[in-house]
Length: 321
Image 1 (cartoon, rainbow, N blue to C red):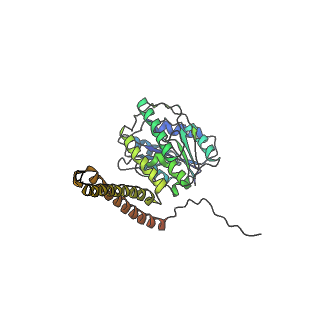
Image 2: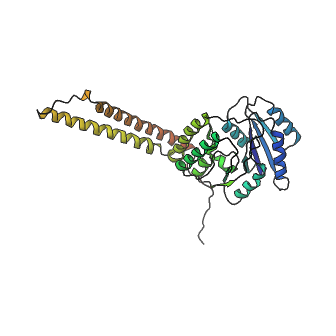
Image 3: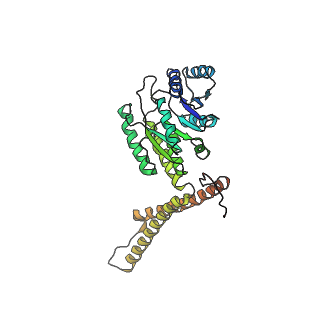
């Protein structure tokens, strides 16, 4: 087993791969680490795969994986985690904006006892329309999840292998790996890393990623807070809506009775009151949410039977002296 696996997703980065490998080798040449570089070609349409094959053939510590089409960064990282053999994984982008000299600093932080170390691009060399929305997004993640990282989007991160025995990524969940790891009890930290301007290729991310990222954030918040108790969320909302609808109908029924008893009041016709329909809808939604909560609990019970919800790091037996 290697000490270190450097996992690099690649999508149309033919001009930067050789220089990236040269810089990685130069940064680790004086270390005693055994390491490998795992490239995942995420359906590139340029000569990226050809460059990866040449690099893999020139040295045994380089591995290439090729997708038939573009599946996204999360899928590429998942494939890299599956095929990598290192005890520690370092992820980085292939565009040379991540500085390979930071790898040793990430590993030093891992050796302090942390399980996940995220890079923080304190001085970011990107256009303003990427920097400022990212700041807002990072603030939202920290506020909603409680994992206080300045830069959840940074591609330069280090992980212990054990994390991925319990954390699975899909969709666009790769940016939330530290959050998911922290929810399982792993220790998460960050360091300031050097971020360099892009010199080759072009950015692969547009404004649509913010909408996807927000939806994924809601999913992560649900999974980390209510994965093993979904009824606490769905049931609470259902009971609240059912109670509001019931109280609304009781109040309308009281007004209807009073209008029939006292002749000085004009009769109330419930079907002419909008509150009547809102109350009925609230009751029906409440019942539906409660039913969904019970179904979610049944699914969760089946999941519990096949995998433990507890994050156990070690076991020991104390024998009496």
